[in-house]
Image (cartoon, rainbow, N blue to C red; front, side, top):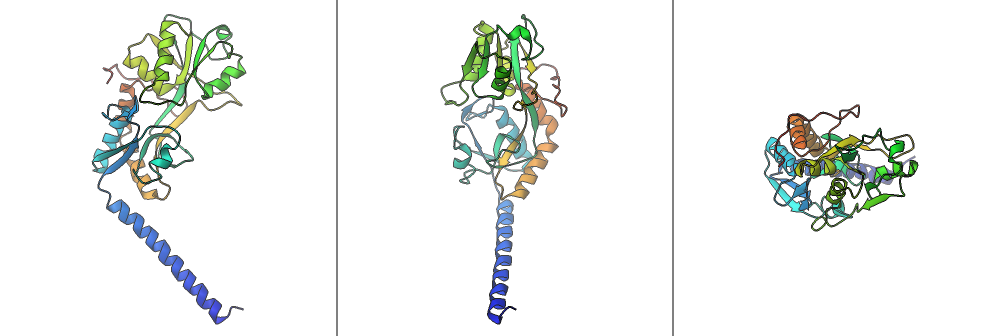
Amino acid sequence: MQTRHQSAVLAFATAMSLCLTWAQAHAQTAELNDRTTLRVCADPSHLPYSNDKQEGFENKIINVLGAELGLPVVYTWFPQGPGFVKSTLGLRRCDLVPGVSAGDDTMTTTTPYYFTTYVMISPKSGPTYSGLSDPALAAKRVGVTANSPPVNLMLKYHLMAKMHSYAQVFDTRFDSPDHELVKDVVSGETDIGLIWGPMGGYWIKHDNLPLTIQPIKAEEGTFPMTYHIAMGVRGSEPEWRRKVGAALTKHKAEIDAILFDYGVPLLDEQGNLIPPPAAKATP
């Protein structure tokens, strides 16, 4: 049986809990209502995604989002790499991070706005391959991004002997190993390249290179090759997440057009490559 003192303490604790819950909800609502800019954190030198001249496809997509939300875009520039989320979104230096994998465990993510894949690139004038299991690849020189999911398939099919590895983590201000990977396939330094689709597709289109793109299919027991891409927000802001997600969904066709302009390979929900529309000039 509770004493009068215990009942009073319980009542006080309950009242304080309700007040705290109301205060937190009120603070979140006030934050959303008082939002006067679209604060975005992005890399200042990482095309095709973003740069401080706002020439990347994420910059263009953010402009679409800002127009829909009626908010001017303000960037905080910070190099991509270890600690990016903690040093930007985590410190409230921005409210949105574009171009993250849906379900990323370092932040809460919005509705995805595109679906893409790792790809195999090879010369248009050369042979075609059915996939990484194709016996014709046994003697080929393969360029691949270090520690990326396709390496798992290379191990499975014993393609490591002639592997050319390109850095996955690098200083975007000075290096572009993805560009080097693509150029090496053109020069003949390697026979094929295995690369993240948005990077490979961009450099092929940007440089007008005679290369083909083929999605890499995941196999049982290997890492996924396809990923839904979303935007990152803080977990404490579900209404902001909903609002951004709704805007992305509303402008899906416009966003797809931007991605196609940059050569990004897009997949339908069955994992099939979506044919791009009529060719346009690369930005």
